[in-house]
Length: 415
Image (cartoon, rainbow, N blue to C red; front, side, top):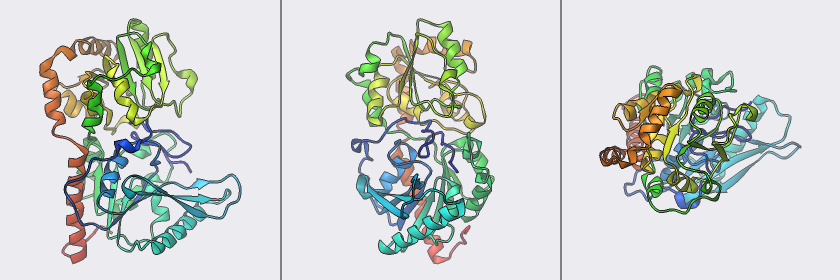
């Protein structure tokens, strides 16, 4: 059964992420980590494919891989014909290994999980993976990992996946089981933390962070991407997946009311009918782009937007693109997503608007904002307080404390 996509990511042959619509180039790997740590091997179970987008899992796990062995277990690839079940191992940055099971068609869910578990046990034995931590992005992976004995279990909850389109019916049930097994729960935003902290005693909020140097390139002189070069100004930009989370009605209303503005939409269209998208001369759908290309596109915009609808799938999202836009030096207008209102709206770093009329007023004000040196200074001061390195180190500190406690038996685990 296919998994839902995360507000920040996708399963194979399903929809891409709502965060960065990109493939990771090797040049954007994590910066070298100065601090070291002592933790066992890290085994991650994800419904997100390593090579498809570069976002929260890649930012964090590439940093872990600088310090120790990391194994990234993807969803299986099911062949249309009969093949002998086997694992494919792909080497990535810093020696991180992506592990993919290849399975024949026609297996039921129980057999699929049992075969994967057997393949993983054999792989663990062959590679001396004896003391290890489990890191989950999806509770659905419990069905193929339940019989293992990790020294630490972390649930890095990026999104409320059960609210996403095509979510598996058992997801909520398995999440409750994962809460029982998890030693630590990390959440991808403050709103998600407020929900999950009621279900786990050791939950911690780690909102979306920023690769400031990468997106700061948008403030420098950069060549104009060919497919954006001919689009007139003012340009109002958005990147992310075009799916049920994007407010296409709002986009259409803005484009119709302001033909002088040109809306640049970067990202693939998934889970919704292409024919439902507004089609006017001033809306430009450019498709998905690589992570390394995003600063060049942002550089050519006048205003950046977060055009999210108000629905169940956006209730707990914490868009990474908010600080990325700001790092690129662009004023931002957003619908009232809770984790954008807090803190960005409350700090007057981002314009918040709930309807087309107010959104248009926000864009009008934002078009003048790049001239506001005070706003830019306040943006930079805030961005200086967040980074993936700081997030990673805070997570490591909690994990080390918990591993020591588990080993010494000074405190009971949740498992």
